[in-house]
Length: 217
Ligand SMILES: [Zn+2]
Image 1 (cartoon, protein in one colour):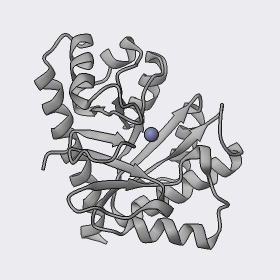
Image 2 (cartoon, rainbow, N blue to C red; image 1 turned 90 degrees about the vertical axis):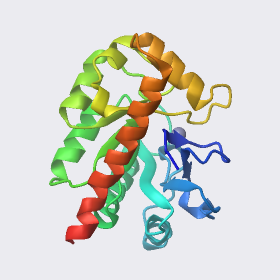
Image 3 (cartoon, rainbow, N blue to C red; image 1 turned 180 degrees about the horizontal axis):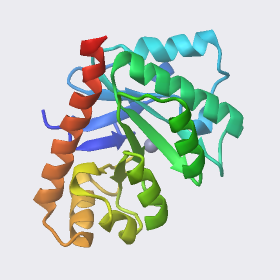
């Protein structure tokens, strides 16, 4: 099993991490998942919803937390989004799994919150990366991984070092992960297989680095 696609909502692809709402989590054999409350459909932050998330997060087929995150254009109040993001961060640390974050025009807020909740042992992935190179630089300087789909800002893609680059299909059925890899490869002036290999190596490292926290605690 080689995981290449760090973030999809489209079931049936065993090479992808399938992102689901924790209330809908019902694991299929051979499929890996990430679970999180998406910022567009956040429930109230209470014990019941934290429990649903925590129960799913501990499942062995769940290899990442998320997506959750910050979207200043859509979704619940920014206060609720931030509180849920903090809850996902601390749960990710508890279970030793990386966190996949949806981020729309909120990079400074994410960085402030991430710094406030230090120290961190698990890596953070900003998925669906479409921001410009300036924002990409801020996120890279913070140590985050960046995941690109078929639409992106080429300058942001080009400044992303190979060891922080991930690719994804998200919720778009029109582009397979191979087609995303080809588009990303063309923009970086390299070969599709290089991008696929890079993504696979990076997913592996992401999971290994995160799981260290479980072994020491
Ligand atoms: Zn998504």
